[in-house]
Structure formats: C-alpha cells, structure tokens
Amino acid sequence: MDIEAAQRLFTPDPGWLNTASYGLPPTPAWEALQTALHEWRCGRTSWKGWGEATGHARETFARLVNVPVSDVSIGAQVSQMLAVIASSMPEGTQVVVPEEEFTSNLFPWLVQQRRGLDVRPVPAADLANVVTAETGVIAFSLVQSATGAVADVDAITAAAAEAGAVTVADATQACGWLPVDASRYDATVVGAYKWLLSPRGTAFLVTKPELRSTLVPSQAGWWAGEDPHASYYGPPLRLADDARSLDISPAWFSWVGTAPALELVEQVGIDSIHAHDVALANRFRAGLGMDAGDSAIVSADVPDAERRLEAAGVRAAVRGGRLRASFHLYNTSDDVDMALDALTADTTPA
Image (cartoon, rainbow, N blue to C red; front, side, top):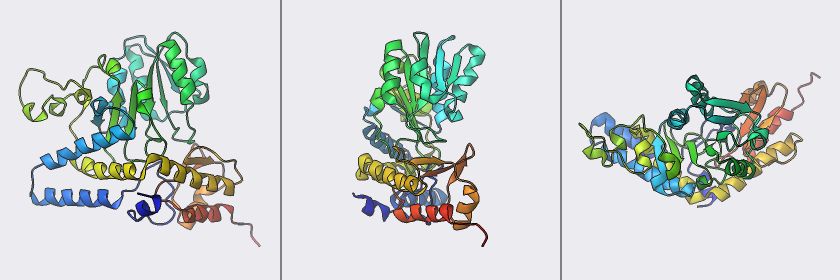
C-alpha cells in the first residue's frame, strides 16, 4: 500500500502535528474497536476473540522490529515493562541514562537506587563516551521525546559491547517511522499509542533470551502461563518458556485496536513512512530557516509559537520551552504550510 492510499484510511482535522504525543487511528483500527465495544455492551460474544487480537499484534510487531515472536512480551506501559528489568538488576549495577530522558525510562531505574543501583544521568550526546568497564546497563531512547534527536546507535552499541553492558532501548518515539532493528539491543520497549497509531494501553517488550533468563517475572498472572486457558486456578507455577512469561493480562479493547493499526504500518512499510515523515519535517525546518535533519520530530525556538499555532487551529506541543512539531503518515504538505503560515506571518502592527 502506498502513502496516498493509506492516507485515505484516516480522517484527521487539518493541522494535527502532534503524533509525538499520540497517534491517530486508521479506519480499520477504529472500526474494529467500535465493533468490540458494541459486542461488549450487548454481551454478544466471548472475550476470547478480543484476546486473540493480542497474538496478532505481537506477531506483526515482531516482524516490524526484526525479532522472533518468542522474544516479544506484551504489556500496558513503558515504565511497567521496564520495571521488571530494573528490579531484576543486581545491587550495585551501574546504569547510565540520558539526563534529558523521558521519565518513563528514568524513574524505573532511579527508584531502584534505594536498593543500591548506581544510576548515572549524563547528556544524551555523551552517552557512548562515558561508558566504562564498570557500566552494567545503558538505558536510552532511540529518539528523544523533547527534541527528536536520533541516538547514535552504532556508537552506543559498540561502547556497550566493549564494556559488556546490557543495552535497553526505548523505541516509543521511533517505532512506526524510523526503521528499528530490536535484535541489536538486549531489550527494547515500545509504547504503541504514538507512531504505531494504537489505542493507549498497549506496549511491547523485546528481550534476548540471555537477558530474559536473569529477569524475575514479578507481574506474572494467568496470561503469562504456558497455556493461559489452563492457568486460571491453583499451583504449581507454570509460566511460558519464552517472552510470554513477562506478559500481563491484556486490556482487550486496546489490543483490538492495536492489531489492525500495526498491520497497516506493515503494509505501507517503515521505509516509505520514514521517507514521507522526514520529508515533511524537513519542509517545516526549511520554512523556519533551519538546516535539514534526520527526524520526524522538529524542535524549534519560535517566539509565541503556542499562541500562533492555536489561533490558526494547528495542534503541536511545547517541550522544554521550545515548539515540538511531529509529522507522520497522515500528514501532508498542507499541514506543514498551515503551520508555517501561522509561525512566519508578520504580526507587527501597521
């Protein structure tokens, strides 16, 4: 499916430039969700069909990030899934993190300082340079939430390999527009409600078997069982022997909407989406007199940006006192020009 055909499956109001906050659903995802909600309202069906959507989403996500489906766990939020990793690290482990990181990939580590984790925040740009033989974990975002800066993955993974450190990548602001190969990291976590166009409440965790064998599945319930439908009652502990052991019970309706959203992303292709998104972002950057970049997120210091955009009906965000605009599959050059007209108009009184 090409970009133009995919865009016909969305109904955004003009000027939505805030996918970095939340993505918009394609029609197949919206309709699947409405059907499930109606079934729930009327009590017309078993919940098992809703649960099956989780498996479909897991399989599609695995293909999108180039890993075996057996390495993919499902959950609700980034911090919830990272907490399992952070709480399983031995006392005294040194964890290097970007100091400007979104707190969902900071708090799970920082809260473990009370039991002896040595968490060291540093500027994201210096991440690879501060890794030493003492470093046990490098936890970082592939794309920074506030600025859209894309991490130097080659340098970070090389430093981690030399130190023997575990890499934990948050791909929430990357997966869906930036090609992501999760096999490069020991763990990768993704919230699906942004660039993967899904309802809030679905997330994925990819873990390599070597790391997973050291983790305590402290949130395990019946869905983490080898056979969930034979795990309703009683001992013994009988968890799945793959990444499903780290699952939590799915929020059915969120997963019903996630499965078709991911299928659309796969049908269009990440490479095509990447080219489209970055081209729009660079059109916006050029209009503001900025150099071209490599991200679908643009951070710019534009005076009075929030008021100007709001008056023009453009929805973006302000992070760290700077305008943050983000461009995705459903956006067009008209959205870019609408924002530029608002931001570059001469408002000097006559």
